[in-house]
Length: 114
Length: 113
Image 1 (tube, helix red, strand yellow):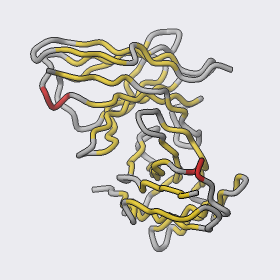
Image 2 (cartoon, chains in turn brown, green):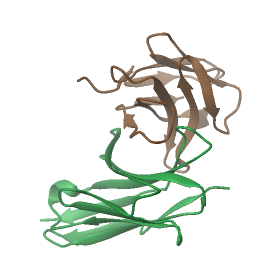
Image 3 (tube, rainbow over the protein chains, first blue to last red):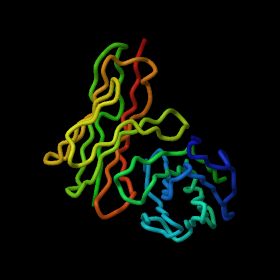
Image 4 (spheres, each protein chain N blue to C red):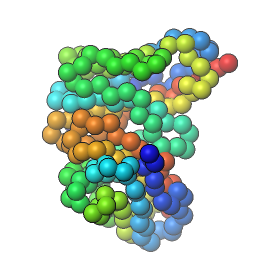
């Protein structure tokens, strides 16, 4: 069974631009969560989607948004990029939205903002 | 505010040694506690998940324990190997917050041959 895939793996953008990251969950998984990882703040929760609905949201500005499609694939968008948005963005999938399931993480997208 | 703390931040041990990584959490309504491994520049690999009703879980050389009353979890690695070198992260989830995980800052483990 294929794991969680994220595209692209690496991205370089300049301040003010916007970016869209994609995450394909494990087949059969309906929940997708997104996390930002930086050396200073560690791993921080962005949001969770289940059955195309946002179930939970972290403390990030409105520039960070996401969506989920009917096939459970998810995208996150960051508008008006800032230098501080440089990070490893990880998505994780699980079978359900509850917290009984192990979450499986993808390899991440490394975003660099210049 | 829910917080997860991991001590020490870094640990270096000789090959073959048994070791314990520590994780403490403030969430009194913890639902489960997960341990992950992260290799440099890579994603996270799930190691063990302990439900709040459980006291421990074992997988191969790994054993994780959970003590809700004290707000602590430990990951025991037996007979460490150089391939165990990685950053180990623990994360808690709450009854009311679905799949949201609160992560500790991790312990960077180095096992020397």
